[in-house]
Length: 308
Image (cartoon, rainbow, N blue to C red; front, side, top):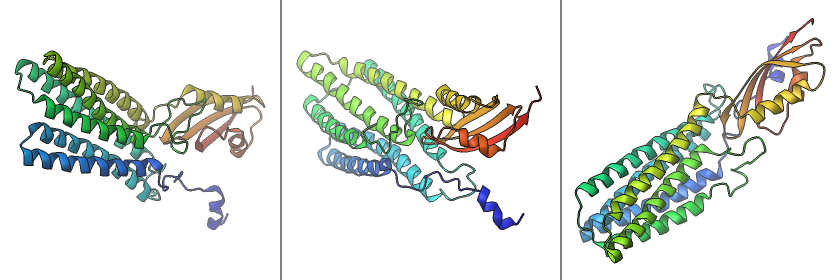
């Protein structure tokens, strides 16, 4: 066989990772809005001597950093999509960025909890009107950011199927959870500060901080589980396995002896399939039986003959 004929059995392992995703454009827009608000709040806090404004500005800076990780991941995935050192493309980099952002969310939740406990033990004077104003502005900015990111609103980015009800772009989901955490913080702050101003319930402020920390921790844990499953090549959903088994075993007495199926990116899967049959056919025959609507982009098939 001539070497130049091998291309008939070869294919690229890019799987669309070199394309600009709408999640990337959304994230860049949210970064611009968040950074602008951060600069305004830090500048106003320094100019007017307001610790509340300065603190909220620095808080937004932490989220701008997290969103920056998301944007960098999108860029890196595209730029390195043709790098052959990545065996199955660069799709898992999105999951890695989501995992990193989940850790930042967990750290943010811990800081919220510790600061709230400290406020319980060492109360400080609260300038309610200024603090409420800052919280309202921050909430408006974060609601706008949430609307821009629009989780599951874009059919190009969010592919729902009967096989995978929770499929999503982990990178975009991480960005969404960061701005959602910010919005929750502002909303709880408005509620607590209003209770303190109008009802004298000053203790509501640190209490809402603890509540917010618990909720953010739950979001962080969920994102950590989902992204770590991708990074550790956890077996794909049982529905996907079932569809493959049904397609292969429905004829010719075929039986799947071993099946490995895992995710390598957004809605992209690879499989290693070991088939036992008494009427063996070329691997291409079994690949042609595989369903084409589950995102399976690469399948390694081995066939074993069974005399019995």
